[in-house]
Image (tube, rainbow, N blue to C red; front, side, top):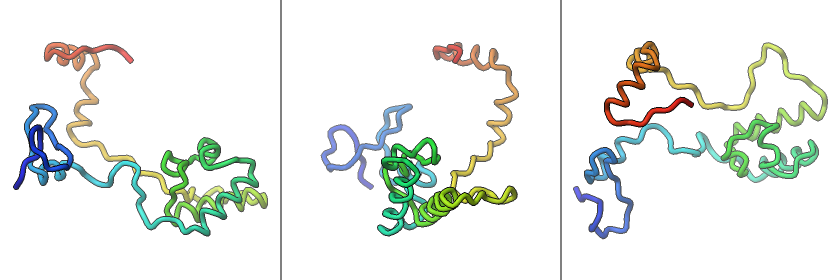
Length: 150
């Protein structure tokens, strides 16, 4: 398996282990990535018709573009750039149509916009939360870290 790093001219990226500056095989570097890449859609992209309809509804609601509507609509950074999944576009279209007609969503109805799920804490993370902050800071300083309050 080829290695990638300084002095290797393969034209690809250089996956390093940043802690020890070791060059890793490409398989080892990619095995460290879990789940989906940052900012990537979790479904098929919205159709052109959906994006046009969403743009028209946003304009009717008083927004100039997706970026302008990011805060009020709760768009993610990816969505503010005009990239939606089909399900997201349908949910936002439905929301804007309901707002335009004055229909309020039912109180027992959950929001239909897909949001990333919070990760469950591991046993180690739960254990770390029980340790006093001063003790954690002292240990980090002992190991050479600079510690300051937020």
